[in-house]
Amino acid sequence: MRALILVGLVALFPGCVERRLTIRSEPAGAQVVLGGRHLEGTTPLTVSFDHHGAYRVEVVKKPATPDDPVYLRAIRTVVTDEPWYESFPFDLFAEVLWPGTLTSETEVMVRLERIPDEPPTEDLGRLLEEAEKAREDVVVTEDD
Image (cartoon, rainbow, N blue to C red; front, side, top):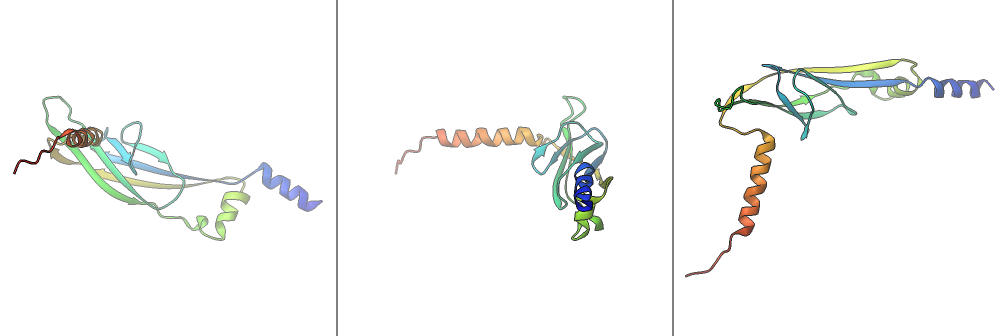
C-alpha cells in the first residue's frame, strides 16, 4: 500500500528540468539562427532547448538604413555544459523524483563584426537556389 501511495505521489508531482540559452549581442537587436533554424525575435534572446551539446549560432544585424551596405555578423559554436544533476544516475532524481523545477542556464555574448555588402543568410539561400535553377536551364551545345 505504501508503495502504491509513493508511486501516486511521484505521478502527481513529477520533477522538471528546464534548459535555457540566452544570446546577447553587441550591438543588440540582431537576428539569430540557431542550428539552422531562424529564431523569432532579436537579441537579447532566450530560447529553451532539449539536450546539452554544441550549437551553431549565427547572429546577423541588418543595416540601419537602406543606404548603408554594411551588415554586422558573427558565427559561433556554443557548448552548453551538462550540470551534475543531469548525468547518470542523478538525472532520474532530477527529472522524475524531485518535486520542483531545476533550471540549467547558458548565456553567451557575441560581438558582431562588420561585413560589407553581404546579404543575410535567408537572402543568400534564396540566391543560391536561383543560381542552381539557372544552371539547370542552360542549354549546352557541342560546337568543336
